[in-house]
Image (cartoon, rainbow, N blue to C red; front, side):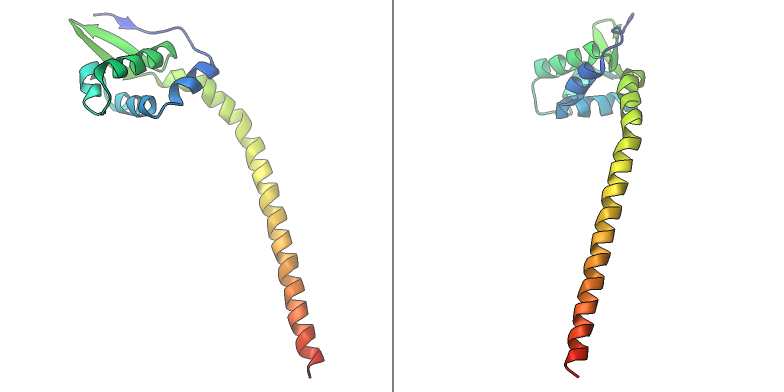
Length: 130
């Protein structure tokens, strides 16, 4: 009964691994509890060999660990496998939020200007009709 873990992976490997929807779903399953490959396969409409390939990709990316008990292969998520991706996102998030805030404020100012111009136009039109 040995635990098999891959060496730390790169952010690119992690992104490629989680880009596939079935692999994300597998990762969510094994994040809750350690599961045998066969049990994981019952949650999907793809073949067992396809699930094994997905697990191999997740293992190579360092996102899951594998523990062998007899003939069973048990998989569990390795949240630390996401550390580099998390660090990248944490670094980028403030810049993205800053840009979003600037765009939202510019949009609000534009809407306010348009609303003020529309109000003036309506009221000037009413004044000239009196």
